Image (cartoon, rainbow, N blue to C red):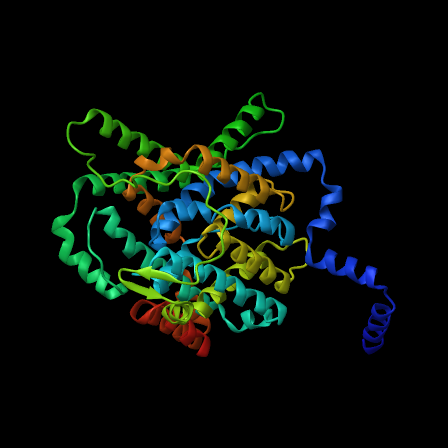
Length: 458
């Protein structure tokens, strides 16, 4: 082993500067390794996967913006830069970078009651911290975050998301901070529930759950049978309806809202998104000063306001991204350092187009895998679809009901609540069970950042 290391070091020293540069580029810009063999077959496969992925990403981006407490258009701004950047720097073809429920709720923890400039600056600082983690090769730190901590953290954030969206599902209007305070406010404001929002929200949840089950239906095709091709087509249609259920649900609800607006004498019986600024975002540096009311915040004051979020948000993003990359890195070696650098670049460049902090999403990566993606070029096609939507179809978002977005979020995060692990840890390791329960409880009672740090410490 020692001889082989010495041999590799010796061979590295004999390389010319040009050879060293080419080796560095091939390692840090993976695009150059697979692009020369990119064929027409790959173009078709990635194009189909990109469009399918876009139908999932568009409604999620709008919903996650609501979860982060910002205008829906900033969710769409956050949805296209990651695809472009990861195409150049990413190593796992299934990974898709964009807004996620986890990053949205963590971002909201540190930017609530602040304006959008703090969110954009947090995106920039997230990229800076992640880049430093990559340069310093700190990928091994992820190994110290055990499975019970991750499970407790994700389950708690899922509960926080669901409880936060109950307000929109009921058409309630109140502002409180903290999970327990939100529960109390929901209980006290129940008599104020708007029937229109409640009925629409329940219908949307039922619709989404039904279409999700639709994708699990197996349409068996017997070889040689007269209806083999028809069954395969039917199975593909059912699968496509299942993965495109969010877009379909939002589209139907928006049509209902527009019909109510056009033909009812009274106002629309449920809250809608309203006007969105059309077009692409302007390219500009992150804001290093801002104003809220009559108070001006300088850059150091903005950093102090963001507090621990400058470290927690990047860490959560790296944790999620590396975990997803490991899950899908079946045929290639996963380079944690390269994934950190790629994610950092997505956030750094995203901050130039007013994006929220982003990372990989397991659900979208699973959709990409099921769609037959062949290379990271899929990010290009998905990003182009988002840009076309921003440029030409933004007015269509006016009638999107907020209760529908809440239903999409509730159904998206409900699957992250891991109940089975409790029984498993009870049988195998009660010490890990204590760690999980402490992490979960601390996240709910004291904030997700406190729960994550406490879980890591345990």
